[in-house]
Amino acid sequence: MIFPDIAPVDIVGALVAFVLTLLIFSYMIGDNIAFRLGVHIFIGISAGYAGGVVFHSVLRPYLFDPLISMGTGGGLTITFLDLGLRLLLLVLLLLKLSPRTTAFGNPATAFLVGIGAATAVGGAIQGTIFPQVGAATQLFNPDRASGFVGGFQLLFEGSIILLGTITTLAYFNFSALGRANQEPETPLPLRIVGWIGHGFIAITFGVIFAGVYTAALTALIERLFFLWDVIGFVLVRL
Image (cartoon, rainbow, N blue to C red; front, side, top):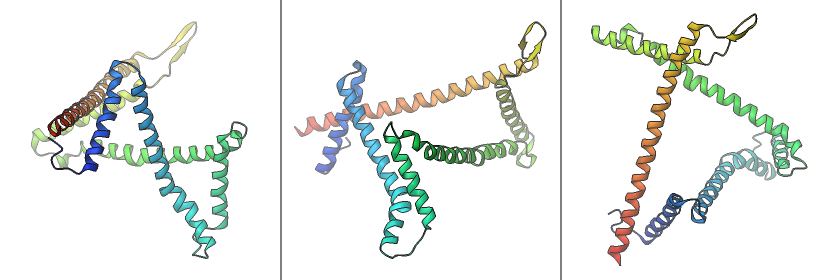
C-alpha cells in the first residue's frame, strides 16, 4: 500500500484528497451539490494560487518594491514616469470592477491584449514555426543519410511532412473564381489538394484525441487505485 509508516499530516492530506476525489466522481450519477462543491473548491484554490503568483511575480517586484525603495531612500531603480505609468494602468484596470467606470479601463486592457498578442505571435514564430521548418528541412539533408535505405527513409519522411504542410494550408484557402451567372467555385485542383489536407487534419485530430483519451484514462486508473489504497489503509488500521 502507499501509506506505510507515514506522518499524521500526510494521512490527513490523503483523506482530504480521498474526499475530494469522491466529490468529483459523484458527477457520474449526475450534476449534484457534492460535485459542485468539489469544483468550487478547485476553482477557489486555483484562483488563490494565481493571485499569489501575480502578487509575488508581478506586483511586488515591479510595483511595491520600487515604492518601498523610494520611500526608504533606497536605490531608485525606476524613473518617476515609469512608476507613474504602472500606477495609472493599475488604476485603470481596477476601474473595470464597476460597470459605471468600466469604459475607463479599456485602454489598459487594450494595452495588455496588444502586448500579450505580440508576445504570443513572436513566441509562436520563434519557438514553433522556425524550429519546425528547420526540423523539416533537415530531413532533406543528404549528410544525415546513412546508406541508401537511410536516405530513402529521410526523403520519404520529409516528403510526407512537406505534403501535409502544403495540403493543410491549401485546405484553408477559401478563395473562389466567379463567373457570369454562376456561383463562385474553387478550382478542382485546389479542391483535390484541400481534400488531402482535410485527411491530414483528421489524422492529426485523431492522434490528439487518442493522446488525450489515454492521458485521461491513465489519470482515472491512478485515482481508482488511490481510492482503493486509502480504503485498504483505513480498514487495516481499524
